[in-house]
Image 1 (cartoon, rainbow, N blue to C red):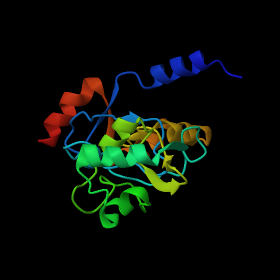
Image 2 (cartoon, helix red, strand yellow):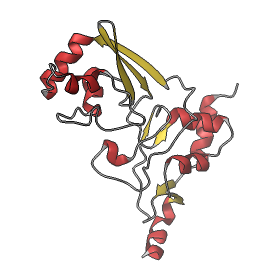
Image 3 (cartoon, rainbow, N blue to C red):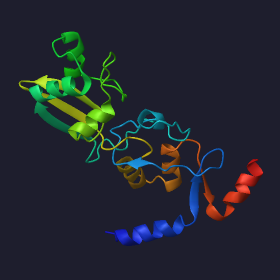
Image 4 (cartoon, helix red, strand yellow):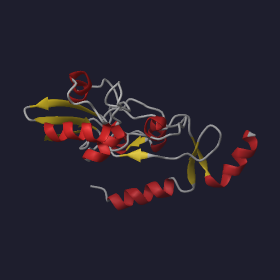
Length: 199
């Protein structure tokens, strides 16, 4: 096979002094993650600020990647105690508890449930050391089972998806435009010129 060091060196040479800018000719925040599990997120779904170039997109390229799916099993009693302690969930109420024991979203979201007290997926991921916020949850005997998709925050470039696109012959320009909406690749030395004519 080809030496990966040579491939990387060639890529660095081909993209030297190249930067990505948004529609207003501002440098972008080029965020990335390991695997989106089939669907990237909008920036505002993870962080407080929206960015027009960090928009959710469907990504089937990463679905065969090593981080596309995952599973974690935890004792049901520990999960229920956590919900009560961390969020004040009334664990005696089946109406409050059931959505947090049988969580089957149709797409990525921000909260596990739709009623107060809201349980933020981002915090659940951090507290339980999950690969992503993109998961279902169900009871299985004395346990609850998280079955998830992806690895990382899900915003921007999905690395495993981008690698698969490259294997299929997509150019780096095609790949960047797939994950970042309405961006432009410009030479760093020309950046001021593009800013001046854009005003």
